[in-house]
Image (tube, rainbow, N blue to C red; front, side, top):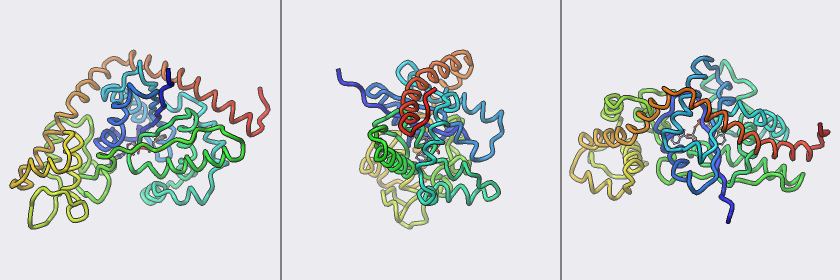
Length: 332
Ligand code: TYM
């Protein structure tokens, strides 16, 4: 029997999960949970590049695990774990720091954005974070890394680092491909559609745990465009707000853009916006209910992340040993 191909990805528990995380990443993971050997984690080590409130970070990490499961990641079929529980991430992260160039890190758009937003705390971790992300990935030798569009640059850097390392020491790492969905790869803010949806802009952001009435309100207030035709037509350059809502609607209903245009032909934005909101409410309802149910059983969630760390640690240790040997560290 052929071995299954492997997928790996993670999300930072630095804020509550939102529709962008779901459509850009998690949904894509869950749809492939049967056909791939999957590793998904809560990227808590990454979150402290920006100051966190410790109690909130702990709560969100557990909530995120419940949400992964509620979104369809069965812990029996997927390895779900907390990044900091597998110490090999930090260790390989250090090694890869020494194979990642200052110039490469300086070009990362996320570093430029985050350092502009956190001017009082531009720490070393924020700068070298893509080397840790490369370690997160390469430890598990995955074939694919399913992420939204904004993480593509980091996955490309990971490939460059893997190729550089392999070029010196032989084939140590599998060089993975980014895996980006066709719809939902870049969900934009409902308030400022030129920016991506992000937890730092709560008014334009739909969280997976938002109440239905809040979701509907956010969609009714969504910024459309000041064009005169006021019809639902897919034209991202001219009408970014409408295109974003169409993208969300297409992603949650499975329709293509032509079908969305036909559905709303002759109707204005007044009918379109609440309809998108309702479709999102229905898509998120089972996730919200299942998350609430799972969060009531902390013992179960603990058993999931413990088992996940054990499986992940086994795999990570195999790669780390190989790396330590290759670079010349004396065996214990
Ligand atoms: P993070 O936590 O910012 O985002 C998690 C995932 O959600 C996707 N995403 C979006 N997709 C579409 N539209 C949006 N508005 C949107 N916002 C976020 C992201 O592309 C991502 O897939 N560095 C990573 C976490 C990470 C990681 C890894 C990912 C750490 N190690 C190893 C993959 C492999 C991050 O900060 O993602």
